[in-house]
Every structure is written in C-alpha cells, then in structure tokens.
Image 1 (cartoon, rainbow, N blue to C red):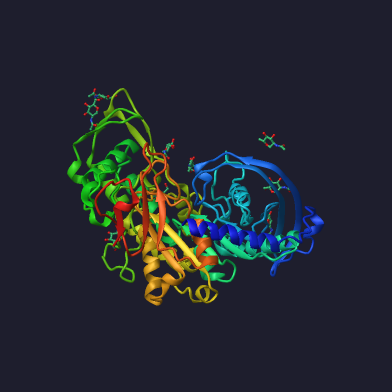
Image 2: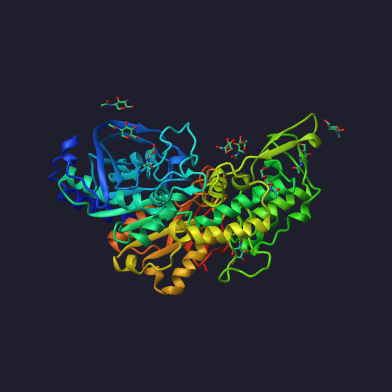
Length: 539
Ligand SMILES: *[C@@H]1O[C@H](CO)[C@@H](O)[C@H](O)[C@H]1NC(C)=O
Ligand SMILES: *[C@@H]1O[C@H](CO)[C@@H](O)[C@H](O)[C@H]1NC(C)=O
Ligand SMILES: *[C@@H]1O[C@H](CO)[C@@H](O)[C@H](O)[C@H]1NC(C)=O
Ligand SMILES: *[C@@H]1O[C@H](CO)[C@@H](O)[C@H](O)[C@H]1NC(C)=O
Ligand SMILES: *[C@@H]1O[C@H](CO)[C@@H](O)[C@H](O)[C@H]1NC(C)=O
Ligand SMILES: *[C@@H]1O[C@H](CO)[C@@H](O)[C@H](O)[C@H]1NC(C)=O
Ligand SMILES: *[C@@H]1O[C@H](CO)[C@@H](O)[C@H](O)[C@H]1NC(C)=O
Ligand SMILES: *[C@@H]1O[C@H](CO)[C@@H](O)[C@H](O)[C@H]1NC(C)=O
Ligand SMILES: *[C@@H]1O[C@H](CO)[C@@H](O)[C@H](O)[C@H]1NC(C)=O
C-alpha cells in the first residue's frame, strides 16, 4: 500500500507538470466553445470559488471517510442546455481546482438526484476537475428541502420519458463530455484520466456508464449500486403494503429488537461475537421463535415482540418470489435485506403512544422513492394508493416494471465487452447489512457478467463488506472501505490489481480492521485478535 501511495504521488507530479500551460481565466468566454452532440447550450456561467470550505459530513462522504474541505480555490462553471425537441433543461456543474491533478471525476447522485452538488467540492479538493448534473430535474442543492419525484409524469397517464432517460443515463454521458471539454478549455490540456465516483443511485450510474458509455471513464467506483432499480424498489415498497394490508405497522423499536435477536442468534457462527454476521447466508433465523420476548425502547415504552412484527421482519428479509413459485430465470423477482440489516429504510413507522404500551398506534413512514416509483412509473397516477396492494398485485407490477424499465434504468446488462476492450476498470463493494439495497442483487449481476466472461476479474471486481450499511453508515458495526478510490487509481494507472480492500470500523470505541474479500471469496475468521486484519483471511 505504501509503495502504491508513493507511485500515485509521483504520477500526480507527472500529470501536474504536463498541465502547466493553462489559460486559467475563469470567465464565461473561456468556455464559449463548449458544445454537445445532440445538445443545445442555453447558458454558461463561470465563477471563482475562493477559500471554500465544507464541514466533514458522513452523509456527503461518497466512498471516503468523512473529511472536511478547506481552503479550496477553483473555477466553477454552470452549463445549461437542452436536447432539441425534448423540452428539457439540464444544469451541469463543473469545478476546476487550482491544484489540478490532471484527472476528471464524475460524481453521482442519490435517490432521485442525478448528481450530488455538494460532492463536487470534495472531489475538487482532492485535485480532480469535478462534474455533476441535475439531470434536468430538481437537485436538492438546499439540503433542507426534500428529494421527491414531482417530475415523473407530464400528466396523469403520461410518463415523461425524456426526463426519465435523462436521469437514467443520457445526462451522465453529457456531463462527462462537458466536464472534459471544460477542463481542456480552462487548463489548456486534455484530461489524462477520468473517474466515476458514486454510491447507491451513483453506484447504478457507474454501472450504467460501463454498460452504455464504456469510453467515458477509465476507472469507475460504483458502490452499493441501485442496479435492478425496477425490481428492488418494488420489494422495498412491498414491505410497506404488506404491513398496511395486514394491519401490522410495527414500532421501529420493536423491529430493531427483531434485528438484535437475529444478530444474537447468528453472530457467533463466524467465530467472533462482535455484532456482525459475516456470512448472512449461513444464518437461518426465524423471527417467529422470539415472539413473546420483551424488548426495551429508548424512543417509547418497552413491549413484547409480536407475531405481526415478526411477519413484517420476515417479509423485509425475504426474497420476493412469485406465488406459483416459478422463478424468473432461476432467480426471485427481488431479494430481501440480509439478516443483521437495520429495518428503518424499508419498514419505518411513526408511532403515537398512549398512557401504556397497548395503546400504541403506528402509521407508515415509507421510503418515498419506492412509493413514487409505483405511483409515477407503473400506475402513472401520482395519487395512486400503493398501501392496499397485495402479493398478486406486486407480481403484476414486477412484470410490468421489468418489461417497461429494465433496459432504461436497470443497469443490469451483463455484457461489458466494450468497457473491457476500452481498458476500463470497475470496482464495486456492497455492505452485507445494507438497509436499502439488498447486496444479493449486486452479487447476481456480478455472477451474470462472470457467466458471460470468466475473465471478469480483469476489469470488474466486487467486494463484500460484512456488517456495513448503505453507502456510509456510522451506526453499522462493519468494516467500511474508505480508501477505495486510491485502490482504483492504482489499478488504472499503476496496474496494481486490488485483491482485497483495506477497511476499518467507523465510530466504534475501538477501531477494528479487516481486508475485504473479492467475491465469491468471503471473509473468514482464522483466530486471534478479532480487531486485527491479520486474524482474517479470504476463502
Ligand atoms: C479562509 O477561510 C478560513 C475559514 O473559513 C478563514 O479562517 C481564513 O482566514 C480564510 N483565508 C483567507 C486567505 O481568506
Ligand atoms: C451555479 O449553480 C449553482 C447550483 O445551482 C448555483 O448555486 C450558483 O448560483 C450558480 N452560479 C452561477 C454563477 O450561476
Ligand atoms: C416545456 O416545459 C415547460 C416547463 O418546464 C412547460 O411549461 C411547457 O408547457 C413545456 N412545453 C411543451 C411544448 O411541452
Ligand atoms: C429491559 O430493561 C429492564 C429494566 O432496566 C431490564 O430488567 C430488562 O432485562 C431489559 N430487557 C431486555 C430485553 O433488555
Ligand atoms: C441471497 O442469495 C442467496 C443465494 O442465492 C440465498 O440463499 C438467500 O436466500 C438470498 N437472501 C435474501 C435475503 O434474499
Ligand atoms: C422513521 O420515521 C419517523 C417518522 O417519520 C422519523 O422521524 C424518523 O427519523 C425515521 N427514522 C429513521 C431512522 O429514519
Ligand atoms: C392501556 O390503555 C388502554 C387505553 O388507553 C386501556 O384500554 C388499557 O386497559 C390499558 N392497559 C393497561 C395494561 O393498563
Ligand atoms: C413521503 O411522502 C408522504 C406522502 O406524500 C409525505 O407525507 C412524507 O412527508 C414523505 N416523507 C419524506 C421523508 O419525505
Ligand atoms: C385501494 O385504495 C383505493 C383508493 O383508496 C381504492 O379506490 C381501491 O378500491 C382500493 N383497492 C382495494 C383492492 O382495496
């Protein structure tokens, strides 16, 4: 690792020295030649960014440990354009740092956001020319506002297909093109290497780039990817509908107690009692067996684990399989959360407690992206009631969703031939305690690619992260790989092939480390101090 770091620094020095002939005039005129095939530039604004700072924020730390941005100087460029005939208006943002490392970074979005504006300074402060896009719809630049899909329908019954395609893929390609062109105009040199960095929606987008635009990025870091978008969102919503139809809205505190019981039951299978189920597939926990046990709550009265709560927990942690049990290509429609994952992202509720625990009443607090997917894109009616749909209704929705949207937004085409030919490298990891996106979907995709090309490891590597939640999670106990961007750069530029990913716990009293394994290998405890990476191996 040390050697690789030194190499990287030396390479940066080379890149920097070749980038010396910059014009570096941060004015609109510098960028007046920007153009885009299929796009019509409507407006360009350039502005100096001086001594910019942002506090460390775990929710903004895309694929790195939380760190603050300080003293950043850059040239910001806003490019506004439309695709002729499509009546869309897209804003693409580029920040060109004073201390450029010769590279471009495209930063991904989250939820419905095509790009995360506040991730741009993080990339720029590491020396990258950084680009992101709003995809032609609301971008939540003001973090006090909420990311809702108000743009999916032109009118009841009419999906805005152009905006959907803009979100799914097209504006990501545009952003890479515009980012490269803006860097060239400003620095007077072409970008030497281009990288994608995203998690969740950003992870889906990274996979999309490798599939649809295999020449844009040399290296792609695309983690906890929301691939299979048209499927996993439905299983997330199904837990909510199930609770509604069965009058089973359960206090989150009770669901957390089921999670704790699952961890208690399976924690030691891997040989270390640390709150982490290293291999959830080896755990067979039946929530019904703990019904009747008491639990304590910090947010409300304590209570007794109920059979209704057990049924919600079981639905959330089970794959969605059609009732006639015929699987789709040998796979379920969608996977469940792995045992050990938190339940708040699929089964959260808002509860009002009376004078005693028997008078608690709970209502839904769903993950709205999944609800809005059904309303806008399947029912095509923004006020459609999702909460009385049953299992057979969901089977129908799954088939419709796959038929209409898989090729648009699924990002699950296993043919990465062009990306491989272009010399691209893609790293993904997925937390095995991901509370939003089941890791099995990512495993399924990697295995599909591998079936097409046994040499998949040459360009696409998947690592599993036991006990890690979605993207970045301070409340999950697992080993978080926060330095993967370095590993990717070293692979692309130095040929240093990543066999494992260094990872460590975040926010625990005592830091623990482990080297995450490349799928299909799994982390195994070999004995000794369970806090040390040397006590684990991959098998
Ligand atoms: C840069 O910003 C920091 C904190 O915001 C401030 O303390 C410092 O004085 C600023 N430096 C300059 C040169 O303006
Ligand atoms: C550039 O876009 C950002 C994000 O929308 C906005 O806050 C900023 O005011 C814009 N700057 C200019 C000069 O248009
Ligand atoms: C174009 O979009 C705007 C809103 O962005 C809308 O008001 C207008 O009606 C649209 N025009 C057409 C022709 O669809
Ligand atoms: C809940 O708290 C009570 C009182 O502190 C304690 O006696 C009991 O063992 C706790 N129950 C559980 C399941 O943790
Ligand atoms: C994940 O995939 C494994 C292997 O196919 C399967 O045994 C397991 O049930 C799946 N887990 C969930 C929660 O869907
Ligand atoms: C669960 O939902 C409640 C009510 O909407 C909300 O206040 C709380 O933040 C949610 N909990 C989590 C962990 O998201
Ligand atoms: C709890 O409160 C409800 C109504 O508020 C009442 O009917 C019930 O008897 C109470 N139960 C206990 C155990 O006090
Ligand atoms: C989800 O949608 C519902 C219904 O529109 C709304 O009341 C709720 O505030 C939304 N939740 C979040 C977290 O935005
Ligand atoms: C579901 O709810 C909608 C609106 O509340 C209602 O019109 C419809 O009849 C309900 N469907 C079922 C199967 O209950």
